View 1: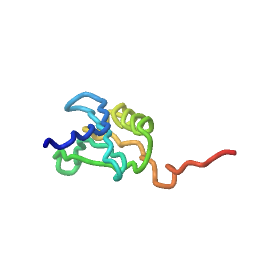
View 2 (view 1 turned 60 degrees about the horizontal axis):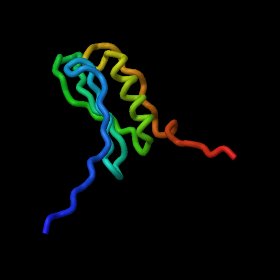
View 3 (view 1 turned 30 degrees about the vertical axis):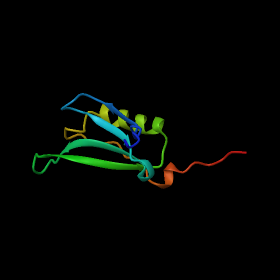
View 4 (view 1 turned 135 degrees about the horizontal axis):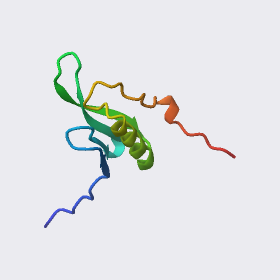
Length: 95
C-alpha cells in the first residue's frame, strides 16, 4: 500500500540568483522563515542566513522578502533594513 502524498509547503523566491536572492518559506507549526546568503564583511565569506518571522501571513513574508532583495545589500556591504520584532507582529482586533 502506498503512503499518501504530502502537499508541498508554500515558498516564494525573489531577487536575482547570485546577487540578491531571498526565499520565504513556510515550515508549518514552526512559522515562516526568510533565507538568504549574506557576506561577512570581516572575512569576505558568504554564508546562509535564516530569519524567523514567526506566525505571519504569506503576504507579509512576501513584502519582507521583496524589501530585503531590493535593498541589494544581501550579498553586498550595505546595511539590511530592520526586521520586525516579535512585539510588532501582534495584531489588534478593532471593534
